[in-house]
Amino acid sequence: MEEFLDKVVQQNPNEKEFHQAVREVLHSVRPVLERNPGYRQQAILERITEPERVIIFRVPWLDDDDRVRVNRGFRVEMNSALGPYKGGLRFHPSVHLGIIKFLAFEQVFKNSLTTLAMGGGKGGSDFNPKGKSDNEVMRFCQSFMAELQRHIGPHTDIPAGDIGVGAREIGFLFGMYKKLRNEFTGVLTGKSLAWGGSLIRPEATGYGAVYFAAEMLDTRGDTLEGKTCLVSGSGNVAQFTCEKLIELGARPVTLSDSSGYIFDEAGIDAEKLAFVKELKNIRRGRIREYVDQYPSAVYTEADPGLDANPLWRHKAHCAFPCATENEINGLDAQHLLDNGVFVVVEGANMPSTPEAVDLFVDKKILYAPGKAANAGGVAVSGLEMAQNSMRLSWPRQEVDQRLQQIMHSIHRTCREAAAEYGMEGNYVAGANIAGFVKVVNAMLDQGVV
Ligand code: NDP
Image (tube, rainbow, N blue to C red):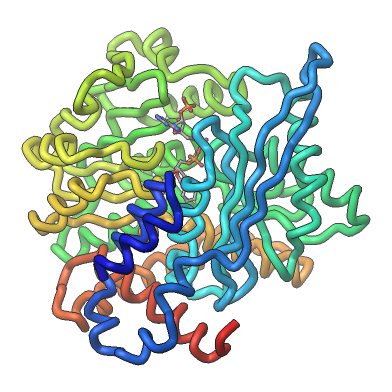
């Protein structure tokens, strides 16, 4: 195994997030490999860690001063054993090939867990939508889609949103696809309701993470009622995580962005959350403005020089990291445990470093990795695709019920897979094993392709 991992590192230099994701999955599935020596002969590990296709392209666009700008675009089509490639697009200056590959790799197993027929992919660009005018964002999206449209389609690859790609960007991307291909199809998910979107899709990742937390607590005869919760991020996933927590009687007390975080001891209630949504989604402001509106809350500026994030030092029962990868390191994890946190549910992708994951697993807290806990987003994207194919739209309650059923099923599948391999209650092992086995069986059925 170590030899194989060394080879992955060598063959994919400068892609440390990809190495991290591969290492985590492969360590979890070791017992599966031992039980199935045939996988080795079929070069399953070599095949599953090699993307089926990687597309890298130039994205030139004109800014408002008529200057030509150039960004880099990516689409990694990782694995289509279970269905067409499916996964979001991320627009953020930190994007590089290693980030997109790690996200695409995780997506394969996440999509496998959803029970829907979706392969895994991911894409994006190092373009930063922050501080750009709507017209600049539109011109960038049009140029991005001018190339991407050659590689995607409703039966091939169906992108969605991720960091920096919300309703506005999906609209511009969809408009350009439609113009170039002269077809109105469900080629993207996260669309606006008026033209093919699904009810509950914006809410799905956050709601799904909270449903997963409720399922985990239920195994200990407990509920979210009255629980104090630390939430990071203030974008799509963080907002709807807070919304569902409030609805279920929990008390979220923090939110953040890359500039800093707010702590509101009284709890972020529905009215305060409505303010955050308006601030972040309409005015595109910063979370520090929360304390201008609610002066009893405290704002702390982010300090990259610190070895731990003070957000994770508050007393709480639950933590929902909903911002970005590796935002909880080993020290943060220790602070969480010291302050009474016994539920950690990842709304973001890979927000915990390997040291943090090891601590959570060792201490046997209720810890849900992103590929299980945040799968509600892609699951409802799958439901959006189903509705598009049938040219109809399901009511809100129906989609929400299906989402709850899917999260219930993912939770059960994780527990059963972990138990089958003697690792009861270990959701990391359960999610990785269950996701992996289904994809591998499909790959074996389909031959060496
Ligand atoms: P958004 O762009 O809506 O929000 C991202 C939030 O995280 C913002 O508050 C942003 O702050 C903060 N953030 C982003 N990068 C960093 C960073 N490097 N350091 C500190 N804060 C940061 O994205 P989403 O809410 O959609 O995504 C959040 C996470 O959830 C990501 O890991 C994503 O992959 C994952 N996810 C999203 C899904 C979805 O359906 N949207 C589905 C499954 C997973 P700022 O504004 O300052 O950048």
